[in-house]
Length: 122
Image (cartoon, rainbow, N blue to C red; front, side, top):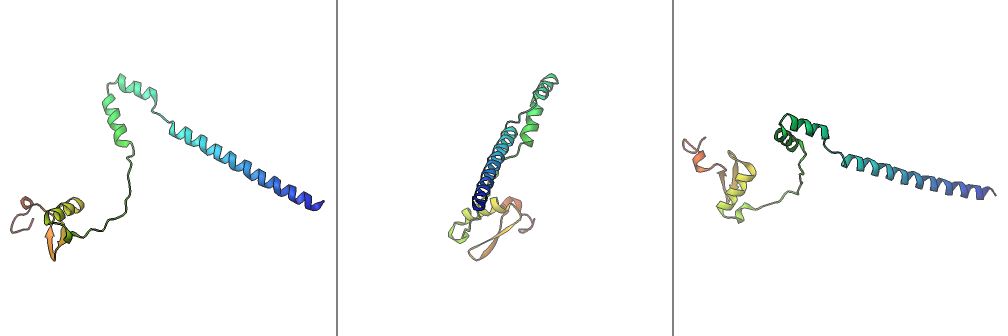
């Protein structure tokens, strides 16, 4: 008899955990739906039309809307396997001006010829 009560209580606890899990998932789903259905305030849009600042409001929203970013794994690249032009382009884009890179045993600048004055010094 006592063993039956223990088994029954254990089954009840498992069912309670199941119900709580279902309720938690349901609540999280409702919160997610509410969050993703947020829109702009219609009154704000009307005010922007009233004061003829529609373009400014659109620009503001574009500037303040988070952009998607993608993180990628670093890539190892042996510059010596590339031509100088390819190595220079990659390093210039990757490092910018006023930097250096090592190619086939020699250090080179990422500056364009027009950017260097006074015997290679900026």
